[in-house]
Structures are given as structure tokens and as C-alpha cells.
Length: 280
Image (cartoon, rainbow, N blue to C red; front, side, top):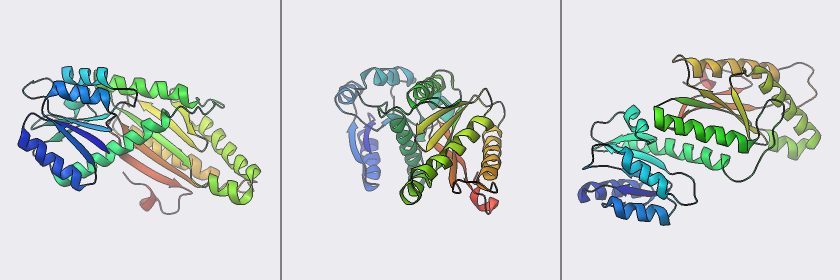
């Protein structure tokens, strides 16, 4: 990733840079917030690590970062702090928090979350539309809702989850068994997704064989994993339906916490060994 570190402490900036470069990232360190904003305007950074000191509040600096971002996608922003919480970081407009001094294992894990979030944002905002079908929104329309959800997270601290459902063997079926079989399998999945989602669920098409369900403002702690279990059970019935003309669909289901990008839970269909395929 292309990473910018904004930290007025030279030694801290150098240590962070060394650790990030050891992980294979391209890193630029800027102690001046004013100079950093100029760099942000001129270069598309994937990720920004921000220590707002000597300011107590990070939000004004984050707001200026948003204003100066160029034509690229919004960077993933970490709040560098000695004591801030994840919730405080999100309410300040950041995606997550990194506590100083940095723990190497935690840094690696959180950078993986950042990359996952970046990949989702890029796929939704790559300029290609995927048309709506049944009750499923087209990609451009769904992306607007997704961006609005992230904005509400930053403004009000609202937590949301993105359920990604992917027909993993679509390309293989298309290649080996032909367009008719592949589309038959895909149409069955589209119909099932439309059937199993509640009216309050926002469903979009991320790609031909990939779908996303947005769970906004969950009412209870286990709602995302309960949804995963429900979707897995319904899609498993589809995969094991007797007498089906279409090939057996192989489906992956992942629950992503936004705007953090962490993998909250995952499963696969057909279900063979639930204890192994369902990870929470």
C-alpha cells in the first residue's frame, strides 16, 4: 500500500516507517500537517496514519484530509493515539485506531482490515455498473448507499455490516459447462437471495457473481452472525436441492464490519463440517 504517516515526533515517525516498510509498504512520513495536506492533494494514498498532536481533537484534521483528497478513493485513516478507543477514532472520522507504541501483530492485523476495506471500496467504485435484477440494486446505486453508510459511521458512530455472497464456481462452470449452465446456477442464487432478504435489508450486485447485503444499525450484538447462519442454512438447501438442473453452486459468505474492514464471520456452502466452515 501507499501509506502516509502524519506525526510531528520525528523518532516516532521513523519507527513507524521502518515497521511498515519491513511489511513491504511504500511509506512517506510528514511531520507537518499543512505539508501533509499538500501531499494528499497531489498523491493518492491508500492509507493514512494520523497523530493529531498537539491538537486534542482529530476531527478538524480529518475533515481537511477529506477536502484535499484528489480524484482517487477516500483513503483508509488510522488515528494514532496513546489512549483513544476504536469508537472515538470512528467518531473522529477515522476507520480505526492504532495505539502507540505500535504492536507489530496488531499492526499487521489492522492493515489487513484496511486492505480488505480498500478492496471493497474500489470494487464498488470502479466505474463499471452491474444492472439491478429482482429486488437487487445495481452496483452504482448500491455504492451510493454504502458510501452514505460509511459517512454516517464517521458522523454518528453507527456500526454496520456488509455480507458478501460470492458464487465461487461461476467462472469454472462457464468455462467447462457453458453459458446456459452457468446462468442457470446464477439465476437460482439471485432468486434465493431476493427471497431470503428482509424488506429492511439493502441488497446490491457487486459483480456478475458477487452480491452484498448491507445490515445497518444492528439492534442486538449477535444480529450479524445470526444473519450469516440464516443465509447459510437457506443457501445450503439451494445447493443440495434434489433434481436440480443447474450444477451445484459453491458459495462463500463473509460478514465485514464497516468502516473498519474486519472479517466478522464467514461460512461456505454446501455446508460439510459446520464447525470448520463457520468462523466467528
